[in-house]
Amino acid sequence: MVKISSITNATKPYIQRINQWCEKPYKALANVKIGKYRPMDSVNDNYIKDKTSFITGLGVTSIVLKDGVGCYMYVTQSLNNKDIPEDKRKFVAALDLANGGLMILMQLAMFFTISNKVVQEKMFNKLFGKYFDRASSKGYQAKLKNTDLLKDMKGADFHPVLAKAKKDVKAAFENVTSLFAATVVGKRMLVPFIATPLADKTKAWMSRNDKPVEVSKETKNTYDTKKATINDKIETKTTPSDHTESKNTNLLDKFKK
Image (cartoon, rainbow, N blue to C red):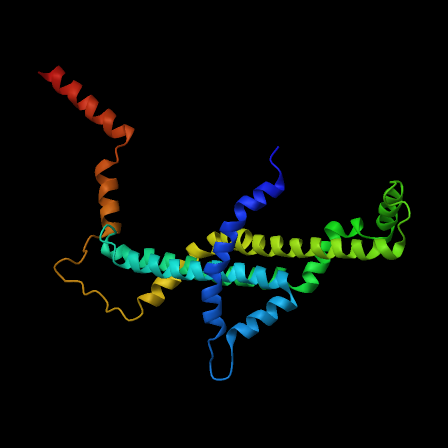
């Protein structure tokens, strides 16, 4: 089996090179000023304050920005796509716009809802709270004291470690549930049910400045559906008595001849 130390030594030069590449743009951004305000100072403060929320928010932000650029490209492509009939282009573009806009809004809504501290606390306690309560804590302590290495362990040594483990599990839980809610529930499950009905309204909004198409009187439809239906019934309707009468008349004629 390959030792972990050998893998670390082999990848160390590549990691250092990546760090050097990242260091230059980071320093350039760190020196950017808007008046007296440095944006990177705020980024650093938020990262230090809550690493998990910062990383989760950064992930959702990158996904939202990607969807925004993709929405713009899809709408522009649909409006200029010659393979789509001209009278259908705006509907396709409207569907793309509704889909993209809803994806962005729904992802943000789900993220801010699920990542809320109150919601996270209730979800975590519901699913994993029993693994960190007083009874479980005593059970863990009892099992650890059965080992020779930790038989002299005291509560003052054990509880901080358990609290740290709970904090790390909650951080991972918050990260996974927030991203899952935003990208899977919001984007892939809820948006498709809303985007298609909303496309008609979006098309109407996009076409609000279009001039109405003038219809020539010569090409105006003058087909009377009610009259045509009555005529068709009269022409096609035949009764058994009609068949019998015509049949008897034909036999009578033959007999006379």
